[in-house]
Length: 457
Image (cartoon, rainbow, N blue to C red; front, side, top):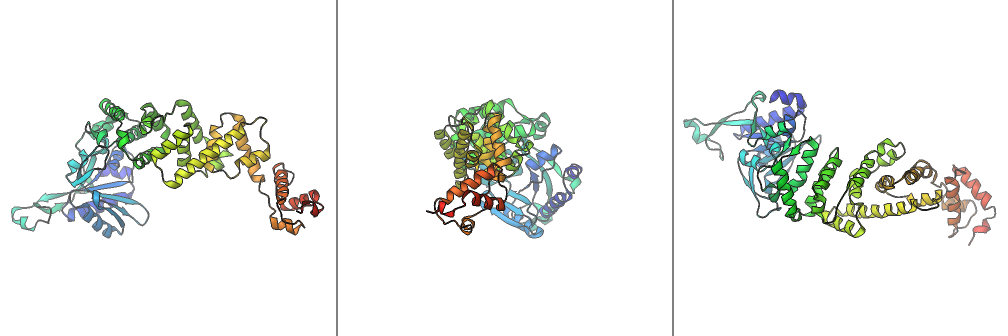
């Protein structure tokens, strides 16, 4: 395993695993690196998210490891886990090997310490149930048993294997499924116990280019028919959706979700069809447009994608789905505002005769980057999309009036509501390209209003 790790991992990660193995050996506890790290390693890909499982007191082990490595700790005693945070911002997760039971389907599990076999058996899919053993305590000799460490009867000075001896543990056929490119659950109630696995099955299938084996897909569909997703809180559904949107090529997963009718399982009536996915694809192509790329670079892509997923919905269903997902309050407000902005923009772009430059500027000035990006792809034809480009390439750069109210007073005009007449004239002149500097604005004011009394109140 060491050779494979050296090919896929940076030296720092190897050194970190050496430190974990060394401490496990010193403390007489079996220690394993597990899960996605091992899966990706077997696929020949580097994964720097290292998860460690300890057959013993994982919280204590994490504290000692953190002290040795100079890391901060965030413990979660309920689940026996700790996140170590290093000065460079990287993380290491340490957990007690555990077994889980579910008081009711969809609930968070009850956790008890267990063996590595029990820990692997609770995993979502076989490909995520692989482990590499880093330290192996040896049995005590008969005359040494009185000196066995508390909590580890029968153990003596540990055998701490070198990297050459680190051993792959595959208790559930994970290697075979990696070779066959298969997503497979470990037991038939997997989606019943934890319906979030429905989302993860799609995410791993599409990320890895794998296929759900027949029984897994049948059990997934049965869980959907039995409305198991209803048992999940909005927070958990939202987090799974965000995890999918964060995938490099999330559209394949979203299409697969639509085909399996997962969106409708989240909220009845939420249905996405292929024409809409084509619009979502155009969102990823904004970088190819030299004008719109500047706007796309300013957007929160996740927020724009969420807006796009909710866009086909009528207003009542939009708010119903938003309520079901229960996103953070600020994001919920932003998505609602973005939707209203896009509706207004698209209505304005559809006007005949076409909007004037001043009207277009008023329509789009101040909208969020997310609203602007979605308007560009949802416009539906090149004429409307061209108006969006015109705003960003021509009108927005021109549209900032330099003069202020104080400047108008300095020019001899008295403050009052009719100042708006002056600013409107300056804006229109700027948008039409007739003025382009502060000095030219002042000249225009003097020409248009040679007698300041004309705009006194």
